Image (cartoon, rainbow over all chains, first blue to last red; front, side):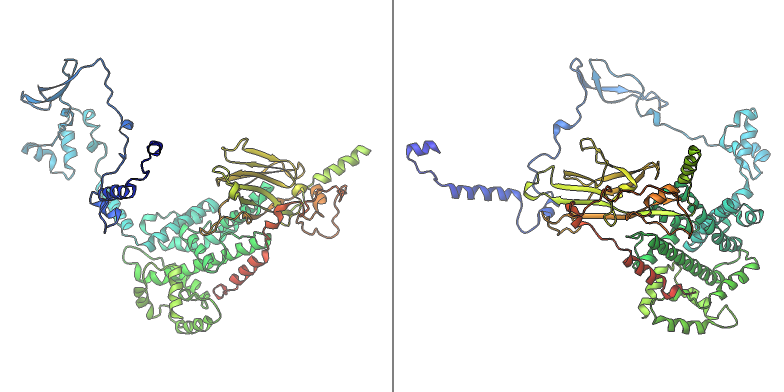
Length: 402
Length: 222
């Protein structure tokens, strides 16, 4: 620049056309117009200007300077072969000495011992259903030799296996409804055992889950939560008092947990959904004593509501659902009936908000009232109703009806 | 003779009031100002984390000291504040969780209480343009509950504006406690603290109304 100045030459001799030339030249190397950069990259595109991986960062093969490496075409044998066939391959030779050892893939030559038997052995031992085990034992020189064989260690018990498979298939074929019930029943059972430990309760609640929650548990589960809720609340209050100093939010948390202890995770989620629909904060923004008390009471009311809904749903679905293998105790229909009759004014699938809907509720109620609780419409209804009926679904259903 | 009456007094001071709780409403959180032109890469904001009485009353009636534990990248991340206002100011660029520990006077409790606050510097909405004048404020309301306080403590705090005490049954006599000198009592004068103007006013009325309305829904009429 300065030189040109001294010499008196013009400073800018062809700068603009030069720039223009170099830029289009570069552009054509970049990408064609008309398609986006990413699309062009899919087809392979333009090579990146910088390598994405720094070659210096890659691990180098550790090869000390004093070693001389050559590659030689040598023969080898494999212990996996029965014959002495000599094959050839490239071998990495270090300082002139070829590697020793077996062929590296020989260790994968595994074989299976298939049991074969003679006619004599068949006659003697194998006409028994428990075939293979018998022959193993018979062939063994002494019982001790063969006792570590898995077949001998765990003899096949056919009745046990039939029972196990039946249970498995029942668990596998459970619908969500059944799963839910079983989970709730199991929780109730646990709770009843830990809190009440009276012989009566123990009997009711020791029914195994796999036989598909008989109605005994259902009856117990109606009673157990009511008792345990009060116990839990008292326990929670006592533990707070023993703390002496605590935060109001912590106290509310403990009380809420105590109140929902008998509820499954799904129920708790439904309570929270309910709260959200009521435009109530899941955790109060201003947790004063009064606010926390109200919040707790609201949650308890929602829980009761959901529990009753569930009971009613079970009752209605139960009749069309259970077949054959489950035996209903004669107690059950009466119990549920009593529970339902008490809630005549309450109709589960029209949980309604606002004064307008009370009319509708009244009307629906009239239809349902009648001598036979098993209304003729109910089997049809339960077929139509989708199995996975959540509270929110029923809410939405109603909203559409308005 | 004198000794025994002293002893009696001491005993009644310590005696616990059954089924009584006193509570102290508190608010804790942070105020953060963007430094604007003066902001550098590592010091983009000036923030203050604090614990205050919900109505800006003096918490030192029950609180002896507050310890704030900051992110380990800060020098001396454990900072103790021995007198009100229980606040701590710093400058930085990052948001992190601050552990706040309340230590109480010996007649109140020997166990400290832990709070956690996530320091917020940037506004919630993406469009929120950073302003030097308007700070980002995040506060949480809570109440410290003292279950079954001693008679002595009750007597000491019953007239303090920062503490909520229940009415004791008529005829209940508390041990005499020397009244705190009203002048000596350190009052946090709102005029002194420039942050007061940014504090949220927490009112339970709104929430109570919503809850009451919810509980009155038809679905709960059984």
